[in-house]
Every structure is written in C-alpha cells, then in structure tokens.
Image (cartoon, rainbow, N blue to C red; front, top):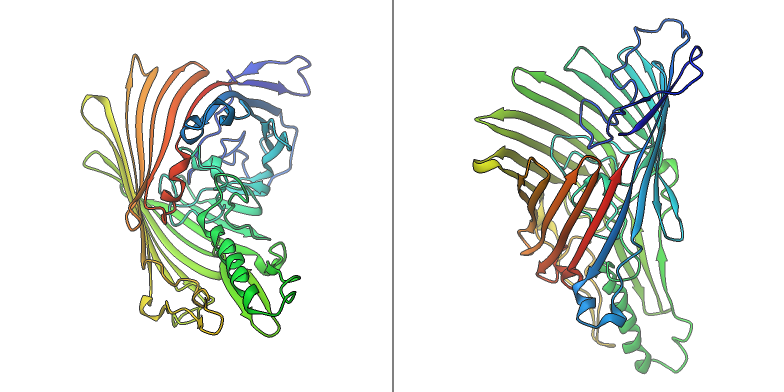
Amino acid sequence: MKKTIILTALLLGASFLSAQDFGFGSDSDDSGGANSGGGNSGFGSFGASPLTVTISGEVSAELLGYTDDFSKGADKTRLGDIFSGKLNFSAGTQYAEGVINLKLQTTAQPVTIDEAYARAFFGGLEIEGGLRKLTWGKADSFGPLDVINPLDYSELTDLGDIMNLKIARPLIHASYRAGSFTKIEALFVPSFEPLRFAGEGRWVPAQMAQLDELSSMVDKLKPMLPPGILDNFKIDINRPDISTIKYAQAGARFTTTVGPADLGLQYYYGRITRPATTFAFTIIPISAAINFDYNPYHQVGVDWAQVLFGFNVRAELAANITNDLNGDDPSVYNPSLLWSFGFDRDLIAGINLNFQCNESIRLMNDKIKNDKLFIPVINITLPPKDIEANTDMTSTRIITAISKKFFRDELETRFAVMWGIEDSDFLLIPSIIWTRDTISLELSAGIFGGGKEGQLGQYKDNTFIKTVLTYSF
C-alpha cells in the first residue's frame, strides 16, 4: 500500500491511507492528484484546508543481456546496472497541489527529475505549470495527436509504456471543465526539445553513418589535392538555440461526449521533432557543414472513441501544415496527413486483443527531388538537396498485443509486435508477468528484425532478454 500522511492543524499524529496510482494519462485526468476534479466551490476566499502529503514509488532489480554479446563469450557480456527506482512526492489541499517525481539509477546522474509541477484549482478551472508529461488524443500509444512531449529513443528496451519514453517539458497548462463530459484545454511551451537518440553505443541510429560517409569523402579528396591542404579540414555541425522563445509552442484542445461517442478537436503550433538536416560543401575554399533545424508546423486534428459491437474503438485524424505549401522547398518537410485507428476487445477464453495502425502520408510527393550532385573532377557524389529524398511517401506501422491471464489474474502471458510496413521491419516482445499484491516479476525479450534500412530493423543486432523484479509502494 502506498503511504499517505494526513496533516491538519488539529491533528498532531500521522495516519496512513491508500494513495491513488500514477498511471497512463487520459483526457479525464492526467495524474490522479489530490484534487484532479477541481474540488473547491469556486473563487471564494481560501480558508483553512487539510494538507495531504503522498509518498509513493517503486524499486526494481533488472538483469538485461543482449544475445549478440552472449555469442561473443562471458568476457564480452554485461547485464546492466541492475538497480532502478522511482520516488514520487505530492502535497496538496483542495485549492492547490505540488508534485515532484524522481527517477533513480546507478549512473553518472543517479537522481533525475521525471516531473515537477504545481497546480491550482479554481472550481472547474485548473492551472498548472512546471516540468510535465501530458497525453492528448485517444490512441493507446504513438498517436498522431500526442504531440506535446517528444520521445527518448536512446535505448529501446522499454517500449511497452510510452510514458517512460516521454521527455517532460516545461509548460503552462490550463483546463476548464464545463459539466461532467466537456473539457477545454490551453497549453504554452516556451522552448523546444527534439526526439532524443543515443550518441554512442549500440543504439546509435543508422543516420549517424552519414557522418562516416563524409569522412570517407574527405579521404578520397586528399590524394587529388596538394599535400597538407586538408590537414585542418573539419566538418562543422551547426545547431540552432532551441531554448529561445523563437521555438515556443502552443495548443488548444476541446473534448466532449455526444451520445455514446467521445469526441476531441485540437490545434497545435509546434516544431517537427525530426531535424531538417542540410549539407553544404564547397571546393574553394574547401569546407563542409551540416546544418540542423526544426521546421515549424500547424496541426489541426480530431479524435473519436466509442464502444461498437463490444469493441473499444479509437481513431485520430490530423493534418500537419508546414511552410512548404508547394512541396518544392528542399530544406522543409512537406505537409502531411496522419491517421490512427485502433481497438481492443476480450476474445474467447479470456484472451484480450489490442490493435492499432498509424500512418503518415506525405502530400505533393511528386515535388521531391531525389537527384544527387556529382563532381566528376574528384569523383565525389554529394547527398541530395531535398531532406525527404529517397524516402517513402507513406510511413505505416501496426502495433498489436495479445494477452491472457491465469491463476486468478496473477500470471499474464503477453505477445506484442510492432511492424513497419514500408521497411518490412519489426520488433517482437514476448513476456510473462507474475503479479501478487505490490510485487511483480517479468521475463521478456525484444527481437528486432527485417530490413536494415528500417527504423526497427537497423537494431537487428540488439535483440535482448531481460528479467525485472519490482516492488511498488
């Protein structure tokens, strides 16, 4: 049981109560705080109010090994840092709440802040600010409308919970509940953060190989030029200052219930989290540079959820409108349409099926130029100018999970798959989970495969096996 200490002006002792779990966010509530529903009666005077302090968390012991290392022998095999943990603190009254959630690990940074924010309640109006993870849209995971928090792909051994992948952002968020089923939200994020990838090690993405290609190009140039001319040559990497207000983002969202259907409408102005990378090379004087930027875009989207014939159905549709309205600007991503459709349902014999398909469709694809610049004098081929050259018009991914519980729901078997259609790559995640009260033991694997050019297939040498023992309090 999570321990909750109730402190009041009249009570000098301490009592222990059950605290609400922190789980996957939804439109109705994101953190399960002391007053997530806006419990006070309005804008009246702030009288004395009991203070509720909640302490919760978890401690985990994990062994994780890669099959590629096993084949190299014991002297090449490592099983990770074993320990990890979470420690969550919240304190609140009926008028306000403060939350600090910490991550614990045995690394150079043993304690990091996962979330930290303050929230105030004014009747149906809630205002919060700080370092926050929010979920927009109806999709179970990786939905096109869930745009607030970028994802951390620096290690892909825990894709089962998207909240663990999200990078908390400093933001101001306000929401107003008009009745029991209608909610209006507004959001401001003063800076920008892109997708996060590993800079070294086995999880470095294949795109980093382009830097090696540039180094190879320099080696080809050396014998064709006078000695010493390339001794001081280097490739400059230019990145913008994304902490300035130039990269600020904002959005608004409206959700309501009409009959049996939950509906949502949202607008978001932000930056595409994938960098727009351009390459510049000159012969005289010899210089090279890689320029990173993050294109602004407007998103307009709708979502819908409803129970139909026993299926819990969810769908999202969005349009990402960039500054390349003609589709011919090589340094800007084209506009695109994105959609998601999914459902879950209990099948026969207690088997549960969860299915989701996500797709993005690039507009004005015929304007993309795939041509490369060839310099015959030095026999060098430069990368194409357009940042979307040699990529598919569509990107489609299917995420499916089948699970069944046994022995009074204490034992769960689960098989999940992520499949990239265009690249024919995949990730398989079989697992067995035993849970009793506040203790769980999980044995799972992650099997990458398919085309080496795919987002998942590039990690086909990173197949892993792990076991995790977790105690929650």
